[in-house]
Length: 117
Image (tube, rainbow, N blue to C red):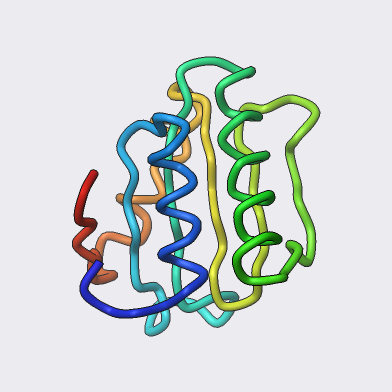
């Protein structure tokens, strides 16, 4: 990643470690007041989606000492949202990601380059 942000770096690393699909980081700071960054990723199944979320939560707890302010959507594992304040992590089942299309909704947001994908 170009810009240093420990939460973003740890979240992306965790998603990569568990083989997250189509990981994207979008700067939404000028588009919404709910967060500065969205991290998006897909899993290949409900179990994979939950595994990705569990890894992000575990790594951020271990490396940054933080827990999410809230987690929504975990029981159904179609779209799980993890709120870390300025960073919101979205992990989707592929059909849900296509349906909600946050990339299109926030298309004006700058994309952060992710290295070592």
